[in-house]
Length: 68
Image (tube, rainbow, N blue to C red; front, side):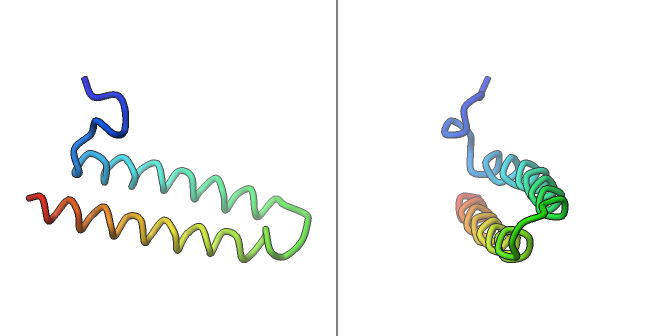
């Protein structure tokens, strides 16, 4: 049984990153919506994290397709 992330295949890493990323981004956007502070946390931080997640997913997808 492959429990740890580094023991997964490229395909399994991509799938795990995809569904956990969606959950994490959903939580981040909810938390930013509820935040009462400055505009950086409310607007810019979710955008920066989303772009970072997309870049990470594209990298993992290309790595997975290259291995196939």
